[in-house]
Amino acid sequence: MQKLSIAVGISLLFFAFSSYIFDPIQARLIGTVAFLVVLWTNEGLPLGVVSLLPIILFPTLGIVDIKTVTPNYSKSIIFLFIGGFLLAMAMQKTFLHERLAKKLLSIFPNTPKGIIYSLAITSAVLSSFLSNTTVTLMMMPIALFLTQNKKLKVRFLIATAYGASIGGIFTPIGTPPNLILLGFLEDIKLTSPTFLEWMMLTFPVVASMLYIVPYILSKSVKDELLEAKLIEKFPPMSSDQKKLSIILISLVVLLIINAPIKPFYNGLGLNEKIILLAFGLILFLPNISILKWEDFKDMPYEIIFLFGAGFSIASAFIKTGLASALAGYFSYFASFPFIVILFLIALFVSFSTEITSNTALTSIALPIFYEFAKNSGFNIEITLFIATIAASYAFMLPIATPPNAIIMSSRVIKIKEMAKIGFLINFIGVAIVSIVAIVFWNNYF
Image (cartoon, rainbow, N blue to C red; front, side, top):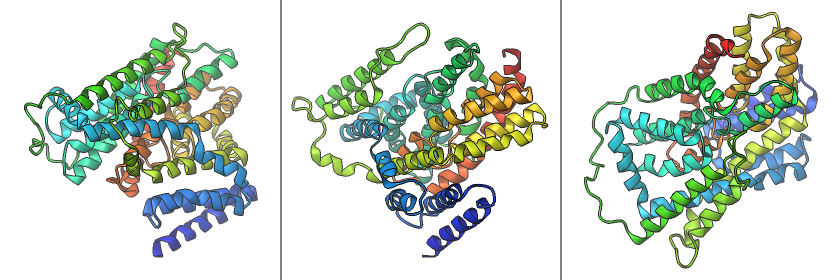
């Protein structure tokens, strides 16, 4: 009851402050979002319960109507999550993740620090070309298997999720905001970087983050051999393991072939959400039978509700005009040095994407920052590029990005643990991308 009271108090404080700056609906939205975030952070109510509150609060407070809110809880991305999680459940059920873990450990040192780096780097490499959601779902069982130490499990899971988010920055197809930027550059008749040029531009950011983030996660952790988890020899693969291996390899190949590499290759054009759900449901077919309907009891439904809450907040930010109003305040900083402007833009986008869709935020922010840069005489391409990269810096909250929500489904991590570490990583990421923009991108754009 005390935590609930704190959440109400903070939400009223946010509402009172914002009512002097924004219109009444936007102020109510800010107060409501503050209420939800505080409840998620201090666990004043169960995660799933808090995630369902937007269905009640948004219509009741006149922010958006219920017909606008409820469809967010059945977005197509949710079914991608379901399909991917079914595959993750199959890996755990067949113990295939143990084999994958051994392969992973054979490349990196069998120490907590080595494993943290290995998980982050592996997730990043895969997420450069595949969905970060898919990669996190596949890597999570491995991270959970590697140790029984709860503190290490938390670090391993966070390394997996953060690595997936960082890896999405590396290529144009790594995450939706990247493709939104390329399309926007074409619309305003500016030259878009090629696939390889994009990788060259983002490499300093990604490499720096993949060195610093695992280093931070491995602090205060004894760098000693892990407990007896390594098995020198596995028994022969079971029939289910062989079938699942074929299914997973087929999935990876299909996702790679399906991914467009513009302007050289347009991909197959298949919907990734359909692909993931289809491969998840394949596991129930009679000749495969790796999963049974009873296995659905292990589905983390609270995370599905969490996705719905995140989409609802994003939708409300757009419909009330709050996202545009917030971004518009950057016009007051036009007299600041360019590096300060870049830092503020990255900081704003980074923390805004914690509570709203990075895709929606990028779509709203790019036109606003384009007008701001053009009117202020700043480099337009660098301004837009840094806003897009910062949209992937969602490290604090589970609603911020699917990888964060997925590792929360393990029920090992508490939201306040993620928020504490993520807050620091957000600032580090913003500093890195700002420095890279001035030192490296100035020579290209």
